[in-house]
Structure formats: structure tokens, C-alpha cells
Length: 114
Image 1 (spheres, rainbow, N blue to C red):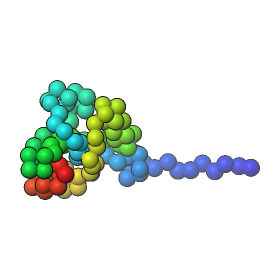
Image 2: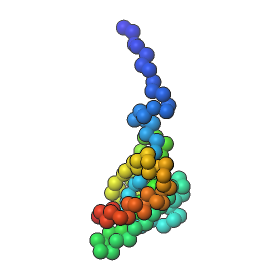
Image 3: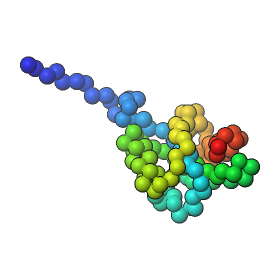
């Protein structure tokens, strides 16, 4: 029996492991700036929503691949934080805006912290 060598995807292709992009990860509660070290320099944007009695923090920044994303999600789990959502921002968002601007756009949708 002979095994056939499979072609490996090019490192620049859009394989599941090469899911490079800017991500927005929403967690319940407010994190102080010092937590930015835990999230490898990603931007922390806090939203207070007294009407819904729920505050949230957006963690926004580049993630190079799926294993890096899973590592970041594992940190969130290990810190016992409540994950609300994970969203990969569009390429047009990446090229035309910085991560703080993307967070400002997210603020307009009040479902962010609910």
C-alpha cells in the first residue's frame, strides 16, 4: 500500500490554519489597561451600558492564524472571562481603518453588550 503525498497549501493561501486578519473579541465586563499585556498588545476598548446593566470590553487586533486565535481564546477561558462573541473584521475594514475606529463603529450597535 502506497501513501500519496498531499500537496500542502501555500502559506499565503486561505487555508483554515492561515486565517490571518483583524479580530474583534467581545467579553463581558470591563478590563483595565494593564490586561493588554495578557492579550499581546491588542487594543482594549471598554463600553459601559448602564441602561442594559451590562458592560463589555472589545479586544481588537491582528491574529496571524487559527492556532493564535485558539491560544487567545484559551487565555480568555483561563482568566474565567465570559466570551460574548468573536468576529473577523472585513478586509476593507483592515485596510481603511485602525482597530480603534472599528471599535467605534461597533459602539453604534447597542447589542454589543447585551
